[in-house]
Image (tube, rainbow, N blue to C red):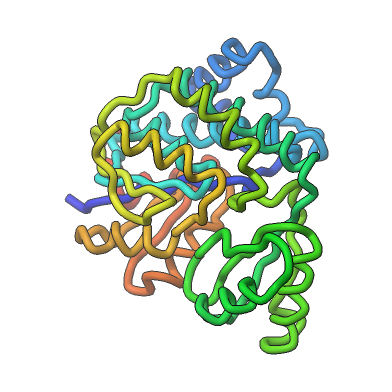
Length: 312
């Protein structure tokens, strides 16, 4: 039987209507949305299905919406007997992966992501940071540009070969972007429409507040292998995972290393679980010999179940 890795998307993959088809077609998916609405005391289901887009794009809404949509999609895949041998999630997506690995109960994941999103949005409002994508530059070269800039700026996401994201103070990020443009061209550098400098030291106030909430949550040893963002390696101890989740708010996302760690176990088939197909593209750029498919609606589900399903 083919070994599979499930990978879960992070902020930026949201879109109005996400999860609606699966919730209409599969009660197990709709139950996840209903449970979230009840736990949170708000109409997150309606926000995912109907928008408005401006509200869905707000950090404190986006993170919860993607978590719920991803877990709903996960539950549908499980009904077809499609289960992972390893999991990972990109930034926010790590919480969906932790639910899949049974490290976190869904209700606790909601609590953590609600706190994480709220504190990150708050920090973004007070710290005035930004992020930028840099394409086609080596990490060492980009790190040198960050080191020469005045102010706080660091590499926040190592997404795949040739795709890096920097994060930090607005002036410092703009300075690095200007330097990078001179070396690799204007079209390969772009500021991202984000509300804060995620995965940078500017998120330290959010990290400290989040730590208190994190300490109140029970984490279980993973029942499925899980590779973590901060290290790009597998973690097996619940206390280690807790520490890595705390670090993740200010540390870089080592996504390229994460995918390589999964491939080293012999897994070459990846399924992106949740809205969008950003991570599927990163798999193809990082591991060209591997395959990647995504599940976000009835059509993509039918393709994946046709390939990997064993029951229904």
